[in-house]
Picture (cartoon, one colour):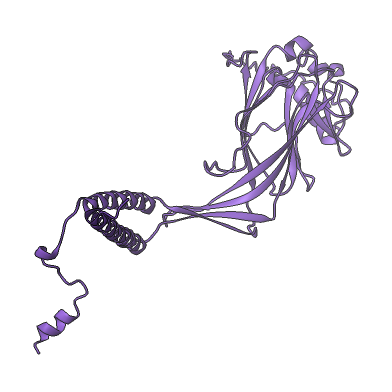
Length: 373
């Protein structure tokens, strides 16, 4: 026996002579339908192969040394920028009053349009030579005998270091500088944009009217108006980088309107979940960000309820971290899926073609003998 004859016996795909093959209309229809199905499934498989899959994993957060970055963009529609204070504090006792570093205030009109700011010319007072320079009083807040407070800011800083409250209208250096009225406060709006970096622990930050002070561990805002309308829009709020598919910015676009004569306290309780995002490419650095959920509560202060008008955000961090990792399918996996599609569809199509042919032949035989009712 020749070697070629041995190989022919191993042929799993014997060829049928054309004289013994019968082509039918039903078989052609099954072939067209199966080919269309194969083409569609392979096209979907190619799209799936080109796009990475996202794997989600949950584990205990053991990261250290990361600061918590708060990105904010909030619009207050009925309160001028000079009357708004942004304060932040955390559970360790760190307090940041009147935060203005990396935070910018933009004046708006009552319709929300930006006001064209006119540049303010700074006047520098130059003392004439050979004359005695007066030393302004610090009104009891000086820390030594030579401490002078020649400007309003010097007096306020001295009182702030002592953690004393200050009556601005009684300070000679501040006369005329901090003169305010209801009309000035409520004739404009303000948009506050920027970011804060705080300790990675539970804490809070808030927008409230008036200058803020800390006296004997009490947080105080110096604002005398009884009714403060705090209609606001949260344009953006996130704790880290923004990821489109994750809930890193669920409050974006939220607008809250208040009645004309109502003074309310708005509380947002945030539950922050640390999140790690690993991109599919090996060169991409991991992104540390945070997702959060929100519970909202508002209190009406018009009926002598305890509280202060303002927008308060309280947050706490979860001990668990969510990890999103992009993973690309291998070419071997893609080729296996394509072969499975082709083989499976053709096998099922062959079974259907045989069933159709056998059924048609049985029907024709009954018609020939006249047994079909």
